[in-house]
Length: 269
Image 1 (tube, one colour):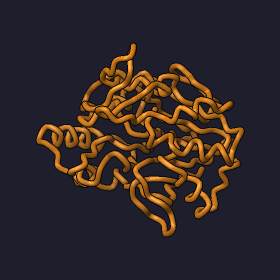
Image 2: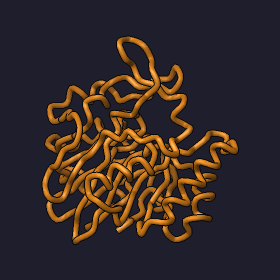
Image 3: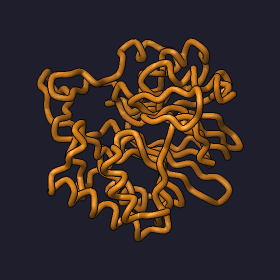
Image 4: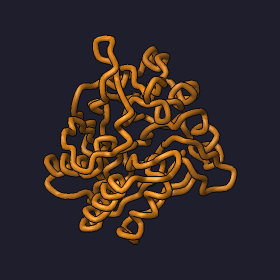
């Protein structure tokens, strides 16, 4: 198995591009796939630098319907016309941050290999997708400004469009999520409902970033509680992107070697 951070907010490999976005490249025994595609064509440029053949990718999983995870789909589709691109059907709906549109480029929906699903999906014995996360423990405070359209009206986003990928390989399970908008603790609760125990590894942003980097005491309390609960698990977490450096550093103090930073171009496994 091979896992590479193809795109992330920070750069870890010379000549690789960093941008506000996330894309993870994964090779298993049966598949070559992408979880998300970043914001721009950076995935194409970084793949060239890293010697990754995007034309060989057979599956693209979109974790949720935001531009910084879907923006590379159209550039990718110019190289690869056959990979199935799987997203929750609600990921195709308009999404906003305040008045700013942050949803996917609607041209993506015109691609012939798009597959819109509703709920969980088992692709095979290696890949499983789940959604329907309804818990709200330690819910990310940054969600408060995010909305979706319902009957022509903007309403608070419930993140029904968020899905998580579980990869089973060599007796280990990897749980991958783009931003954990539903809250990583709630995602893990849902995971345990399905699989019965905690995953061996988790790759995700924690959606704790603030533009000014200054968290309120309430926000810090959520970050600390999340880190304390995660530190009790026999799970290694890889995080970056929407976690934000101040939140990551605060969590790192608690989680120590159970929390590892993601960077563009770096190989996780």
